[in-house]
Image 1 (tube, rainbow, N blue to C red):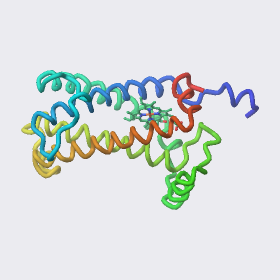
Image 2: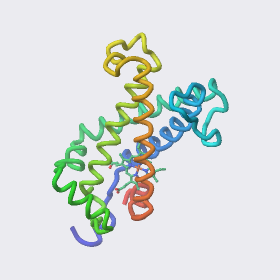
Image 3: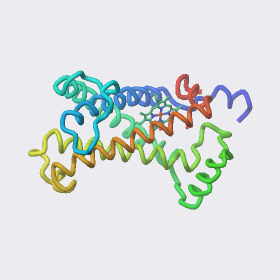
Image 4: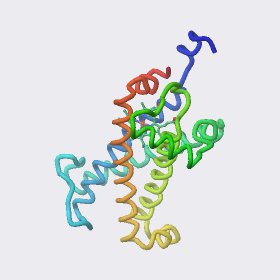
Length: 201
Ligand code: HEM
């Protein structure tokens, strides 16, 4: 590809950018309202800072949580289905080699991980993005158990019962928040990727 074609070719198609940003909105609404719901009946010996929570009170937070969950589910499904059907998931995120993942991870720690071509994800990106996709699926499934525990008995028992599903949901949330924190640091370190996720190239 010529240098000109490289600079004008699309890196992230419009559907990807749209679903990515809608997802980011859904995750922020879900996490902040979820923290308010957790504070109403904490099962760890701490509450989350009230200033970071959404919804004002338990009822309000539940409304936000239920509204945003539809956004995450519909939009997340759209992202996954287009990704899988178009073959992009396989192209962008595979193969995933544990040996190369370790090498890329060590290089990243030394600040030496190449990010030369934003069209291709390195092993650390592949692993992180696949992880967050799976984590969101766990969040939705454990959320289903909490929302309709009588209707999903198999799922509930697979998660070790209702109380255990609450912990699964909480831990998956914490991992998602951890991902977002690292994700934002990475984006700040390579701001060009943000431009590509905003305007496509
Ligand atoms: C407002 C906060 C966010 C910003 C600024 C942001 C920014 C970005 C950028 C710049 C990229 C492209 C990175 C690259 O080239 O490696 C990206 C990709 C990605 N982000 Fe985010 N992101 C945010 C929130 C989120 C959240 C909350 C999630 C998870 C639910 C998420 C999941 C992903 C995934 C899975 C990809 C890879 C997408 C693909 O190529 O299919 N992001 N993000």
